[in-house]
Length: 336
Image (spheres, rainbow, N blue to C red):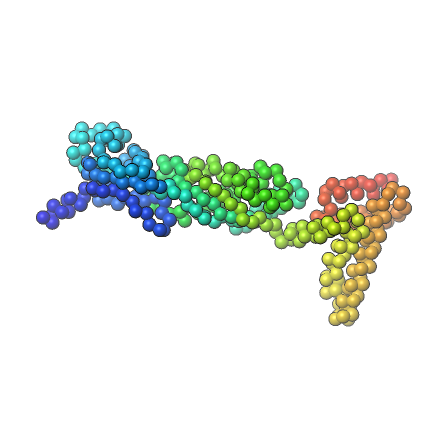
């Protein structure tokens, strides 16, 4: 009696998958000797697919529904095996279930800053963060490229691979957008759509369908963010170069106060403040002369000093390339 019970257990009667809560996306049905009885029941639920694998090759794929396994429901497998007994005996095959529901709220981000080329700032290094959602798309490609002989596969097992693809195509998405960084940061929905589009082909080769990408933040390195903050602050100065230089001098006052060091304390702070104001006035006078009309009188030394100051402002990102070029050309003409 015990022997008959053991034999009956070798022939699978019901094949199904009750998904757990651990993010499984693929699961190989456990069978003793991979033996399936003719007439066994296969249940595939909504959001699932079941694949029969014969000797390592995909034989049949079943969508949601309930199936009675036999020659009619397994035509491909029947042809491969060339059975002539109409499945009166058990047959052998691996059965792999796949979850086709969306894997939501997967996190992506740049562990290190990524270099991109920007219209306003030139080559910059940015960091970005967001979420993405994916599902199993092409089940055969997913089995061939990702699952293989594994007994089970969870969404977390693919996180590093999919995150790497998103980061890899970050620069492509920026180039495709044609937007400068400031506009890009203000159009994160559009940028996220471009990033998703840039990744579709590579993920499809893995059998993965990228359903959605969100961008929560795009950040510049701290040093470049400081330059950006300066440019925003100096926007109030408009075309008044004197006010622009005075703003720069004001930003440098803490350094003068800390490094003046002559006597320390209040006296040192006062000397640093005086030095900063004097420097701001001097630079404003020199640049004011340099940017005045062509009739303004400037000595040879004043022109060179002004060019040097303009070069410093350009190097710090205060002056754009076209602004610097125009002012430099104007001053050089006065040297002739």
